[in-house]
Image (cartoon, rainbow, N blue to C red):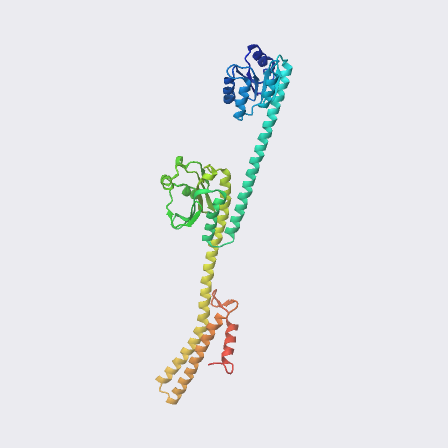
Length: 426
């Protein structure tokens, strides 16, 4: 009952003083006074007391008229009506208008105290119940929102970690940011280490996410600061922040910009940032909060891992392609060059025989042998190419030093047996 406020509306000074000094003051109530009905209504609206002790006979506006006005305004402040003998019907009408109890004059201090304490206790319990119900509803709403957010984060994480394509990662991220934050604008930027520039990968405008080729030189902008320091920024109104790019407000058309920007950090360095601007109208235009920061930071950590995986995969594929090319070149050089070298030696032998003036029949025989050798060389080279094309699995073998070549010996032997088999085409 401490600090409960009670409004006494009583026309008689003696009764008013009695209620104040003998009843309310001893139990620690704060007391307000009103002497006519219109003043009662004004004090109720201005001071919102916890309880009204209302005399039904008041100048200006009767107690019943006051109750009627309070009922029309949906005012739920409990009222205890004070009546004299002969006003029983008026008291019944007061109950229909929402009065909680009544006291008949003359009354004892103990009687009034008991009724007042019961009324205040009932109001306090009702208020506690309402507060608890509201608190439970708000807690339940927050829990539902958290479940929704973490479900969305899980879906996004699965989407961005299921691909090794950077563009798909960026598209998934920015298209799903609105599932959690519902923002007006957003960007995913990566740092070009060689150029020292921030490169926009994907920009978000409402629901639409599109790829971008914009670049930004490092400066005092918010995203640059976040990348440079590796720390997130949550700013309710960037118009008052020295890192704010003044033209951004003109470009977006938003008079006030709430900005949330978090770094994309790997184990070794900051590789970029995610920046979002303004919550949408359906979120009542509220600025970003700590929970939004935690959600976007979690998302950014997954994005950084996905980007690094995609980059590593790209480098690995590039390295594998280079190695495969080297191995293919080594294989061709080993097998085809050997055939060509043997044929070249036979040509040199024929040239030597011509230069030394050997008999014509020997030269014709050498030419015939060379033609046969040329056919066989062509067949062998064709067999090498076909053997490489028909490999079911790639195995390698040492070539020169650390270099390796593709092992086609088994497939090549099979092709050569097919060529030398009786009845096979020449």
